[in-house]
Image (cartoon, rainbow, N blue to C red; front, top):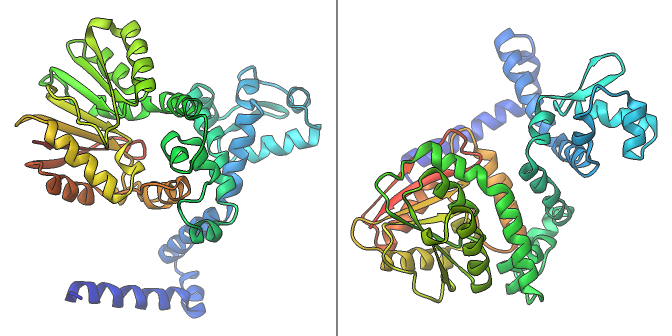
Length: 374
């Protein structure tokens, strides 16, 4: 153990003893600055306790279509109750519960409208689709220790949903699962594409291949913004065919090439000066993820680039999203884990890439970016 690590361990142990001391807590409550810090810590602790309730309030707004109802506001609780199929008191309880979360607002007594966050949710069907999807995660996390003790190969509600994880557990009707997977990816993909477009220029690129690109949601955004790009879509045969047809209709068939295949077992198509992995790497355990990067590196000519965009761990300002949310989400899914940029760069070097660097994004909760060059 290094001297710095020993110092850090000692510091954390001493800090925890101080914070746990009733005498320190009593003393801290009397000093203005320390009292503010202590209250902030207490608020954060309560939010940890109440977080599930908050998420279920949001779920009720989405599944009850309350955002759509409140678009017609201002409305009285009685009118809202009738449209929700709830009693007046139940509807009022839900409206009040959403008020501190800024989902709903009462600008005048008895008159309810969308709150600031509610307006954002109401205008974004993709976000609402993700909220509905997370009911599967909530079910799997009903007993978190049981989930963590179970063999990751055991099927969960979440793993049954995702195409590749479901296939690992012997799920049937793979085509149907693939369609569901692609629909959810398309609903949420614009977040990642937005971060990429705001952070990167594709002026130097001529041909872009999206590996595991689903039905082409990411390529659609990039191809629309950069009309000079030739686009390639590499995915399972039934997915690649559908995705290429959708892209061809939207952007022109002469710009799009479908490449059916399995990115673990088949060679990655060559001739592209940029390859993208969009929310793919963190879905796979270390061995398969390393094999995928190595497979991609073999296909790239010197100077070609690999774009990786996905939520990552240990990102300043977005730490809970990485190891807390995606750590448990991917565990429940049965495959993958969130990785820090440093971990991914180490894997890229092991795969044979000559250089790799991070690219700052405005909203790392949506995606962080790494660019590697062959």
